Image (cartoon, rainbow over the protein chains, first blue to last red):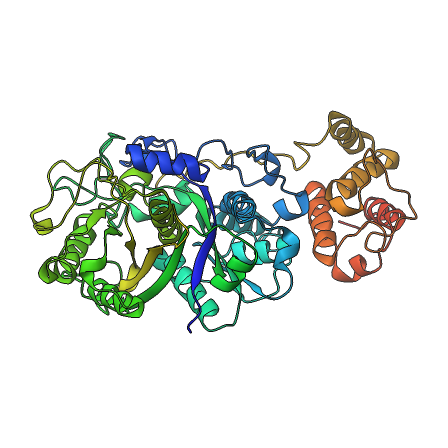
Length: 424
Length: 124
């Protein structure tokens, strides 16, 4: 019998809450995390809204200036190697481990692996390089590399927690942590690891977000309440966010043996690429369509069995349209009408973190018995005709949920989650 | 030369000791003014203790004897030693080579080495 994969722990540091209960309430109540935001003190920059994480101060390149909630104990020797988003990830990790009833000692026997995703810290890299260049590379901070480059999360977390199983990072832009989660499912299915920890994190600062402005990918709508409105005719780009999400996956037999609570079961995933443009989706979402079909096939479920879809839906004109067309082809044309939500309307777009964050939302939705809505959607794009896009969150208890992600270069990744047998 | 647009003024560099206790910052200022090696020792020791891993630190400990070995007793690894060296380089605009670093094993040797960097007339 194939191995089943349970989600047994969740940790959230997000713009809509820094724990599962607050995140669940925000999703249920349609409460967004956007606020007016000054990225760099330059009024000529037209991006005026962001979705920041609360209760952290990590806007300095010096770890000595950082603050975080007192309930998290970050040793200085670990802190010195972290990027700002590593602080978010550390806290989400502590949260997820406590949630799963695990201690550091449970992670060191080789049975646990760690897959991470972030773009690295452009902010820290910029700082350390400027410092090194000031002496024409005669001097430089020894922690400059490990606190900056893509991989900073896996370097630091594996060392801190003594994780000796499979450890690596994934880089596919906004599909990165969805890739991490997909391959983590495979590690357990293949019997290579009994437990996988998946981490997605990003930081919200000018260095990470504003390079998307010249691509015309960011919303310039100054109203926090409507800047991010996936699938709306008036959408004009995404709103940036930072934070971290940690998902703990366990082989179902291990989870049962130790009496762990299961949020949801991961029963399949699929990926496919557009093979089209470097930074824009295929006009009909061809890669995403195929990725959805592959995920459904892997999970052995039909489109009609899916109750809810967490769309990638970043609120960009091109991307949302492509996804809407792909969803119509996969679902509407098959006579299926799952409730579709674009939770980036509430959270903003977490880039590499987005896929894991939203898989976490799906797990909460399955466990708590609700479906998030689209509270900022006023006039749905005609491309969405036939799609079920409720404004309000729904109280129907979903049994099967699909999570979509798309990244640059046309990488598309989808996961299928099922309500855990023990959910109330 | 092509006309360049006005460049943003870089933020003034902040002292690496900005978050250290006032007594340490005062010792640093005094050392710069008087070159009294005892003040230098105070700053170097504070930097060592600041980088000491938590698992070798006992509560209330505020010093380390000259005989304390940086790796064997204080629990430093090679990267943490490199951090101390970088901190000193950055603070005093020194250059410390790998060969010099390899000769330092105790707190006392580190004190003597940093003192020697300022004593040598041709060090710059």
